[in-house]
Image 1 (tube, rainbow, N blue to C red):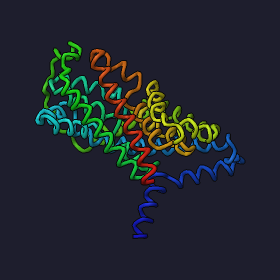
Image 2: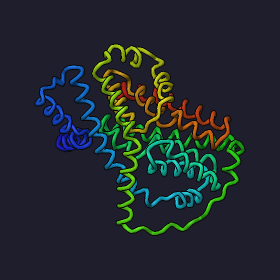
Image 3: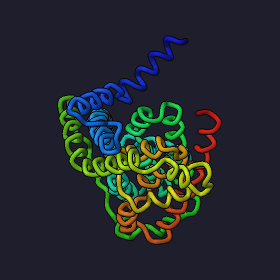
Image 4: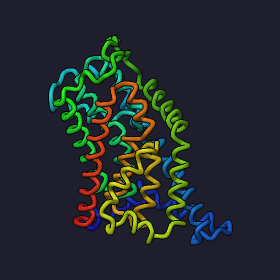
Length: 337
């Protein structure tokens, strides 16, 4: 049993967490005469290590996910979802959302296409919620930072929110609150070309390049914010605002996340820094969920597709779900971590 635990710890710390990279970066900076125990040196160390680590994981994960995604183009996904009805359809839509791009703005065009193709509104919303909130990348990356327990629970809870949210929207019969140009749109059932393995690999490499170009600025900003929090903001301040002494920490974190725009990779460094300073786990994860699911730019895009009432209901469902999840994770932290 001890051997298994040691192997698991090695995978967790050295492979996913890249502790070797942290040590290597620290040694190189120290060799250059930088005191990494000082606020400035610590910030530089945190920034370089986290940027390299996230880019390595980002490239690997996007390649794997994009290769999988090459088997699920929009038309094929629509056909798969169209075979199911009711709760099974919502569950399948939420699961399919895990192999789509990393941010809500990338998922909204697919949501529009699925809705215009005649799929049930609740099913398309289950997809829209799960796609930015829960993906295969988040599972691996969260494991590298928070451990497998937190990562697995996060993914399960995210899928539950997606399924319940989509089911509730379906029960409310809100189809009339989708903009007319989408309801009246035409969908062409184009037979997808059977791609060769070399073409799928080429597609995956292209997705890595395009995604890195799109998100690199948010990664740099996120890591920069994380470096400041990690090395310059006093721990007592973070604990006072986002620790267990503030019962409204989850709500504050959820509200703070909405105006931002990033994907899971941009929010991880901020979450890591907040957690290291004493912020509660539920508070940190609520912030991450709010940023990836309810960012203001995404809501502006979604408003082009749905009317204000439906948009408001969607935001309310996600907000309540995220807040509930935050408090559940706080309880989870006290009980199991």
